[in-house]
Structure formats: C-alpha cells, structure tokens
Amino acid sequence: MKWTLTQLQKYRNKDFSIDETIRLDDIKQTDSSIRDVSPMHITGRGDVDSAKVTFHLKIEGYLILPCSRTLVDLKYPINVETTETFLLQGSIYDTEEELHQVKGETIDLKPIIQEIILLEVPMQVFCDDHESQDAAPQSGKDWEVVQEEVVSNKIDPRLAGLAKFFDKDKSSSES
Image (tube, rainbow, N blue to C red; front, side):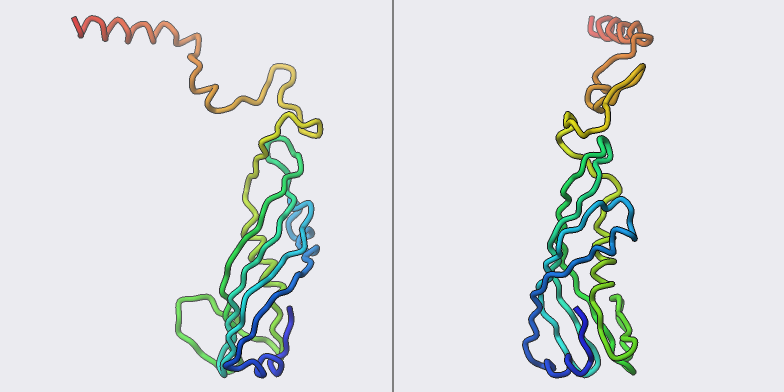
C-alpha cells in the first residue's frame, strides 16, 4: 500500500480503485492485548489532483482479543470506513479535517491503517461463553463473579427490616 508520487500522478482525474489484502502482524507488538490479526482487506478508491491525494477506504478483517471476564480468545470484527487526505509538497489547505503531509516521494497507507485499527480496539470485550474449559475461573474460595441483574434484585439481609417499614408506611397512608 505504498505508491510514489509519480505513480499516483498517472491517475490524475482518472479512476484509481484499491482492492488489496495486507498483513499487519506488527500491530501485535504495539498493543499487547491483540493476540492475532487477520489479513485486512482494503477496498476503496483514490482521488488524485495536483495539490492532494484523497483515499476513501473500507477496512475489513478481525482481531483476536482476550475476553475481559474469562480471558478466552474472542474474534472481534473490524469494519471501518475512512477518508485520508495527503497534501502534496507546497500545498496549503485551511480545513478542519485531518490532513497528512507527504514526506519524501512516497505515500504509504500501511502506518495509517495500523493506527485506525488500533483506535478500533475496545477497552473491554466480553464473550458469551463464560463456561468454556479455557475460561478463567468464575468462582473460588469466598468469591464469585456475579451478573449485575442478579445483584440488583437481591435485598441485603441487613436492610430487609427497612423494606417492611416502607410497606407499613404505604398501607397506613392508603387507609
């Protein structure tokens, strides 16, 4: 996903379509929570003019991440659409969108795609299968993982007498 400016100028005011599959195994060293990366399928188009090159990309693939609760491997899909604009040397634009300045004579999309994928990694991922054999234990001596719904419906035994107090108050006001 690297082109020289000369190669790109051949596509000025012409259709420049992109359909490539790239490997981004280096991303695992950047974020240690990523256990594996599928080959990413990049599709889209590029618009080339004299002052800038704009890429309209769709990135598809998946990451293998650990479940935050059980540490089981989880397949997390990546499906991102992005627009990246590169200013050619000497070009100045006053816009609010993020622009990339071309350094040297080549445009390399691989580092930008890696950055976009890293931004898509969630802080926590939960799997549905917490009973898996590979899963971290869900209980132990004097502890267990509980679901939030279960906890909210339980009444603390120390406060059970207080619930009766409000029942008496309601019955006396209705009479």
